[in-house]
Length: 380
Ligand SMILES: *Cc1c(COP(=O)(O)O)cnc(C)c1O
Image (cartoon, rainbow, N blue to C red; front, side):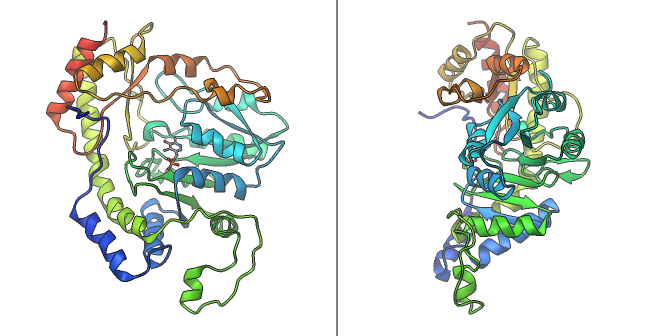
């Protein structure tokens, strides 16, 4: 179906097409000099010491868990209000996800207090999710991690271009993980990036990305190495130069794209406050710089968000739900899930949350249509 206003839209033009075609003409398609350039540019953009491109955001999270030695018997505390990939990546290693609540109905990120309450002798890591691109309380999370000797993984899939205290999200924890899926602020179709400030972790992540091999095809093609050893049980989580070429162009568009997202969010806030004051708009407090990945709102208590989504659809407007909580999925209701912490705020937010359209090319008129449709769909 064609939407009057889709949920999100890619921002691609001839610059991306030219960059991809140039890679095809170059004769070197997989992880080579263009991927290295993408990594260097992403590292510079985030102020990170290391950046490693991978095949998708889930692979980034999986490698982060592996490189931090998570495994059976280890518990990892994370929010349930996230995409299922965050929790799955933990389970791939045999470690156990332990879901903790979010801060409040205003700030939909992992609550440091809830983290503290969920710590046991088995706890090994905290995985934060910068929901919608708004920063978690990283200073407090890092303090808790330091006190309890835990490692910190940032799921920064929403957070390209976001920062707290001037420091890029994804560079606060031990490893930061980004996704470049088709609906993310920076897209390569499928793709992802790992950030770390630790040389040893970077080396480990690099090896695990490519079968645990000590040298790469690229190094051998350049005559830098002629053989290799395999020193870990790694994966093929490499990206290719076609996607990296796309990513380099997309990275240049982030400042302007995120700025337009910000002004669109400001307009949404004004129009919604004036026309539908019953709708709550999270992230009202000021904390850091968001990347404004999505536009979550909370319907009045007792509303049915799925019925609302259908009413918006009838008006040509695509609305989504971020997220059905992970702990409610069938595969997460399994018996060995040790315990579900008190997730009252998560459950309340999730039952009332809907995500309105937001993307850099959205027009002010489209935002006005969305708000009008929200008004009409609220009490159906
Ligand atoms: C998109 C996303 C992921 C997964 O990234 P993929 O690139 O799709 O594998 C993980 N966590 C969150 C919060 C996401 O939004």
